[in-house]
Length: 306
Ligand SMILES: [Zn+2]
Ligand SMILES: [Zn+2]
Image (cartoon, rainbow, N blue to C red):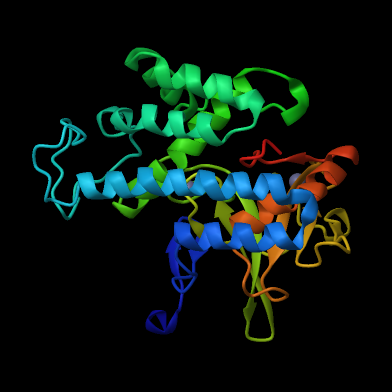
């Protein structure tokens, strides 16, 4: 019987192997431009995201090139780990500072060039700061030391957190694709690769209905998750899990929980099969405002700070 089972099991989470891989950066960029035409209110945010994704792709590509085996003298090659083209020795979920630090000033500089005024000065300062300060910032984020406060709190650490997460997302994707995983990733509703919280849920066609998966906020991995369970607290009573679907974004909705008052946006690909979940989630900022105004909290903020 086990040979007929389409699932492989990690802990108590069924992982369905046919879930799609992370969308490529050009796919995210293209979707952002498409959505910017569909949602006039989100033009600025989506165009900014498209430029940001371009810079993220540069980070991802640079990391991939530096470990492809053809660049033996590269200073980006971490000395604490023997990198071969196969990257076989890949336990843990390390922040390889020697790999990322050479790329960080350039990324922060490009961020300063495309950011709104509030972010520009901070990104410039970080680009010009010394390696110790840059390493400190990245390590703070990697260790989970940034308080996750609402976007309107005015705390300058929000800018630091944004710059760190925007830079470390492509690093995490590269790390995951290189075979690393976080041994702390045992919880039911956290990413089985890097142990971060989901940024959104996705519904996809399955036989006679839809199945739900969650998308990681850091490494972008997608994994299967039960449909009618709150990812934050495990609540499974149907009447305590309200769904709100706004008219303006019929394929993106709010799944909330009356027990813990968390919410997650769900991108329904049975209604729009061309959606790129992390981009469509970002585009639907109006839903975050609605949910916040109704007393719900998000599991973790997106790149817009919501
Ligand atoms: Zn992850
Ligand atoms: Zn809950």
